[in-house]
Amino acid sequence: MKQQPKNRRKRVLRWVLGILLMLFYVVISMTPVNMLLPHNRSPYVYSADNNEYCEFELGKAQDPYGRVLSGFEAYKLKKGNPSLQLYRCFKPDWWQIWNWPDFLVHNRWYLPYNPDCEECLKWYRPRERMQNKVN
Image 1 (cartoon, one colour):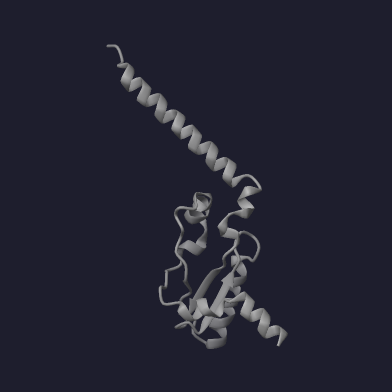
Image 2 (image 1 turned 90 degrees about the vertical axis):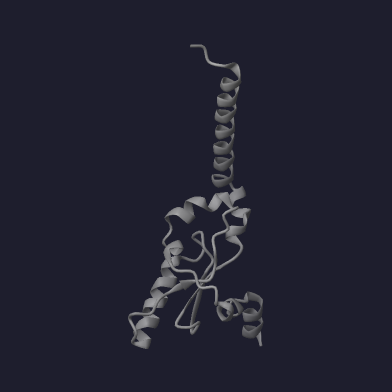
């Protein structure tokens, strides 16, 4: 039975498209261009205890997630409440394909999302904090 040329073209087109997408992903994630993409610009903000505890990390090895966890553990000991839950105040931006591996494997994405983090998001204002240090 002979294969139809139309089906063969579709299959070749799918393979070519798949290879191009993989090359695009490799170029984006393995080059210095990756450092200019948005994941390095905005912090990951976390909250706990009805926004009494707020913490942030800059992400991508600039400010480690482990520091956030150790600070939260110290806060739980200080409050004497080991059952406190840490929440993330951010959603994954799925359009950022260069972050897909991070979305799949990093522990920060297993924390529950808290949409009511306005106080913590207001707390992270780098310019205001710098001005307060100067004054």
